Image (cartoon, rainbow, N blue to C red; front, side, top):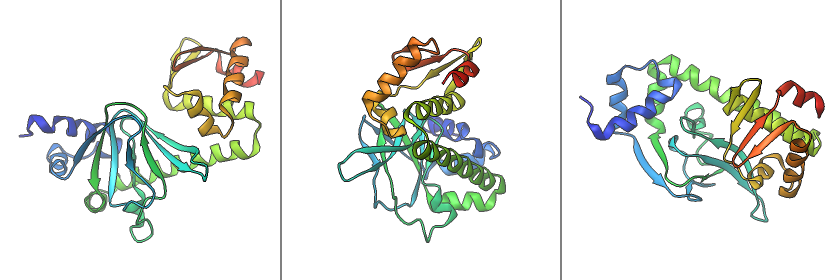
Length: 235
């Protein structure tokens, strides 16, 4: 019988696709090893050099994976939403991935993360091949996304970088609304600048141009894309 205090932890296990095939008893066996931590906005979950002996799962809120340059300017590599996880490379090669090479910074107040010891996660992967296969699939998908964004930053002009990023958000978190796509992103223009590698002022200018051209509609923390095909063709 699962105690009430563990119901939330069961929820996060249920929300992660790779654990779908585990039985309720197998999930409950993981509960005692899971640590729950609540964070405030801008708190650090882990930073460069911290030992990579935990896999972190986002139960509530958002966490950004960042690099800091010499001027303490952030470059956002990934944004983790509810159900996402990080630190999984320690399962693939624990001898190589000993410590984190990135920093995880909380984006929202009242963000909740669960951490599971890498050793235990590895045991689950060894006992259940479908978990490991799901893990590999997720790693490949994230690599392809990051590689595509790197190509965009290196090869494309500012306007097309914004187009590429909006398309990425549309695929990840967009919701169809008739012929439009509604994106509830909760990102500042500075966040977008840190992701696309252009200035905040340039992000604002480009988004306003798209709005004036009737390609998108902007509201606080949301973008409504009018006819995605038109959007792609017009830029």
